[in-house]
Length: 157
Image 1 (spheres, rainbow, N blue to C red):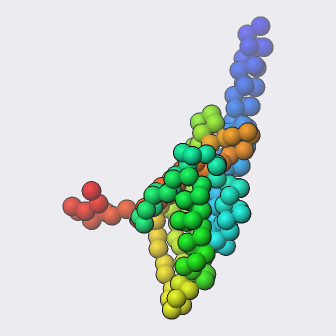
Image 2 (tube, rainbow, N blue to C red):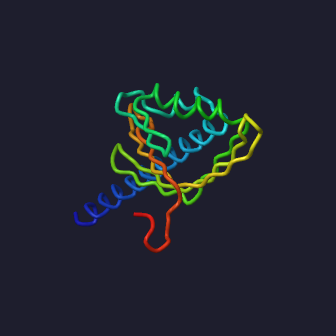
């Protein structure tokens, strides 16, 4: 009886690990679509990865968008109108899953070329994304990005 009980516990733990790995892989795939949507200023792809609920939000140095319509206008359409070339490179990605909510943390480098004047731009930052599993699909519900850490003494408060 003890062996059967122990085997059941091991099976449950194994299933939990597999479930978590599956969720992590699904979120990584969604983050790649997020990158693709930024790189191509593709509002259709962006629309497929964001939840379309009133509480979705995006906090960034230039503002704070609420709801899909504001995010679409303030982020994706902005990138399409402002830049002729866009490339978002994501690194040091960490994903944590907790039931039907997950968060991703990563650093990024964005290289773009302004349409006006054809001037290049490079920015670097870090980002936290909150994902929620709705109807079996992981959808983005919040993004917060900021610049790189400031490590000089007396700075970064």
